[in-house]
Every structure is written in C-alpha cells, then in structure tokens.
Length: 71
Image (cartoon, rainbow, N blue to C red; front, side):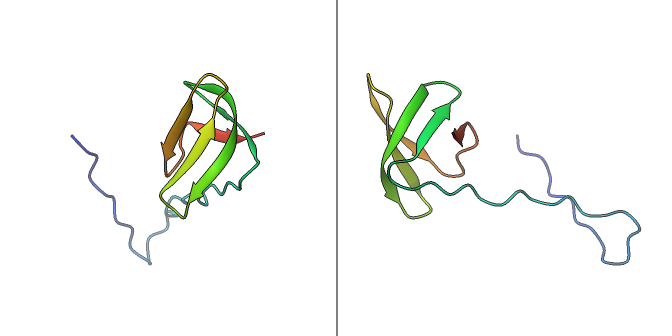
C-alpha cells in the first residue's frame, strides 16, 4: 500500500516539503551501502542504476539510491 500524494495549495500558509536533490555518482566514487557495505562505482547507467563493486560481489543498485551514499 502506498501513501497518497499530498497536494499543497500555493496560497497555503504551510510550506510544501522540499524534495532532496537526486544523488549523483561517477565512476570511481567510493560509496557505502546499508546492506552491502563499502564499495566503488565501476559503471553508471544514466538515471537508472549504478554498478558497484563491493569486493566480494558486484551489485546493480537502482536509482534513487536511497540506501547508498558517497564517501
């Protein structure tokens, strides 16, 4: 079950939540992932996925990369 999308009126005194900017990774970036640990980006599919080498395994991490961050 998904959460319903809340719509905000432009005249509302309450500010609409600000969406964080999308995460950007480049080949060679060192990253950490909540499940897989430390790794290095070895490939990028524009806006779709990142191929990351975690040492013991290579994983294709799909965008929006919520569990992965750049070190």
